[in-house]
Image (tube, rainbow, N blue to C red; front, top):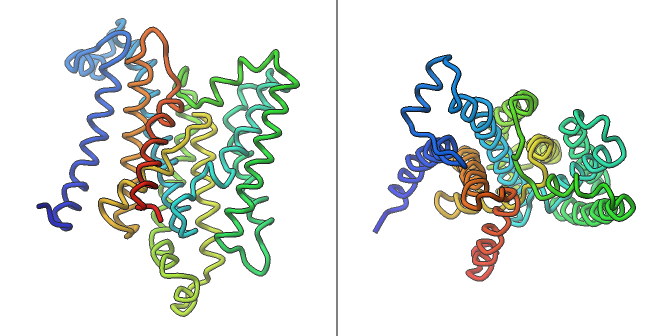
Length: 329
């Protein structure tokens, strides 16, 4: 029987190996299989070739974007679950992704000539929605329950507005559906250049949220007795989680369940200590999105399935199993 200590060490060792394996799998597999020696040749020489086009122009930027998207979503979910002390807290639950989705839909349907601003528009929509939710929940403080209730209400409102746009502009819906499903199809170095600075800044800042997250798990009263400004710390963590989720949504669309499922897996394996939980969630989320995206684009050839659909199909049963075993309550 594996002890708790050895299980944690095993998880710490295997999680980075999982990400490395997922990255190589993403570079190797697709409609054209590329071997590891061929990948090495492409990455170490400048000689033009078909394999160079496949690896450098298509698969490598898509893989790197998948790593950043998964890391941001998992970090956002882990932080929200901790600060709200609620296992259901997730960027999708509190309306952050819906805010980004609505902003992106408005851009794609009403202003298609400004489609190059789609990432920035979705990112701004997610952050503005978060600020609105927090202000609605504020009443001499913003408790986790109020934030979740305000987020659920805002989520429903934004969803209704999105559906209304798609009904009114039904002839343009076809261009919107792939983005709503969530995916990395067509993502290139341009998208990586956009997401990388925000993602790296957000992920680095998330490490400063480790200590406050651990303190807030003790409860508001205990945190105040220890001399911590609970509302300020909660606000910082929620805004940071929204920043991370908005960064991911701006490029990948409405990819769900990563922020909900990944932190749960590592919480069950390693416990609630954010010194382990957050880094492992970041690494595990990155590997999960890359692996799921590779499966979605290669296993269903010639159809490329949006990664958001595959993650929902995998995440929903896992979510139900957790509920059945009462591990989330």
